[in-house]
Amino acid sequence: MPIRLSGADYRRAHEACHNAASLWNFFLASIQEYWKENKTDPTEKEMRHFLYEQRPDLRDGLHAHTVQLILSDLMDAISTYRSNRDSGDNNARAPHREKNYRPLEFSAGFGWRVTPDRQHIALSFGKGHKRITLPLPEIADPKTGEILPPERWGSMQLCWNHNARKWSLHVSVPTPKPPQGNPNIIAAIDEGIINPMTVAIETENSYDVLVINGRHARAIKHYRNTRIATLQEKLSRCVKGSKRWHKLNAKRKRIEAMTDSALHNANHQTTRKVADFIQAHDAGRIVAGDVRDIEKNTRKDEAKRIKNTKNQRRRLSQWSRGKQGTLLEHKTGSTVGHINEAWSSKTCPACQTRNHPNGRGYHCHNCGFTCNRDAVGAINILMRAQHGAYTPIDMDKPIRVKYLRATPIFQPKTVPSME
Image (cartoon, rainbow, N blue to C red):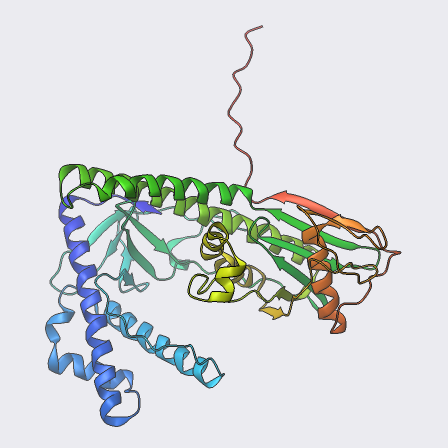
């Protein structure tokens, strides 16, 4: 939720965020030095001793729980790196980048508290430092709409949006786990750039397919790319630091903040509709076509550079596939598996003949089968997930395709007639 801070609190919050980043950098350097000497990772207790002995000044202006949360985040990141390495991910890297800025995290009951008048919340910055007081927000349960009392809130984060130049308060609230579906019912997803997600599920009587249209997100990206390109051209002709340069740079940041917010909303709405569709069919297993890393090195890799045009490489690099997959896992409670999707959009589900479709429609020149191109890809992924290979579908079952927009169309309010 967006918040407004006074001038003094504004400066104190910025200073504390810089101190939190300095603390992260100290912990990171200490762990790297400890590893070089002992070939093992230090414990959190040892890291706290390093801080108290070497740099106790870094704790100034930060609550003790905020310091502990920074250390815990770093240790969790290292633990994740170790587990990824052990699982065979050779591209996994340990935390190594220093930070200049880090959001402030406040634990419930200690880092933040409700004031005695029950009208404000106080964010603590440690003993001897003045707290930042904010109006008590009103938070409702996203499922039931019930107002959640502050006693049920968890930790908070005070975050600064560099592009929008605004502060926001992120409050964590407990939510029930999504219901687990039947693991024998598979939901197959064909991910794409135009239509971000197409889901196919086989029922007793039909093949149900949901196609999410993503043209709104593409329009936002196109608007951002064209506007940013125009501003960058003007910025290149300005002296850096001049009055006109600052004006154009501020305009660029406003456009990036606006489009980032719109794309964030589009990703949430897309995955919300897909999650509802999966849960309505009680599907307990989710399988997506494996297109991971398709957007990486599109210019350095000669094969990818020859295969994709300049515009297509830009679309791939701006694809939100990974974010949407993470959001879908969170909303369904199921892990998204991946399966080889080679030729899935070109193979006819009825006779297994390969065709080269044009546009978004699919027509088989051998048997005359017609359907949406993305629906064909999702159905073939479903068949491979069920049988291990592409197999003909049951032609006695109809294919029911439903189309939804990721975000609703804006319709201005109509002025009632005076008649």
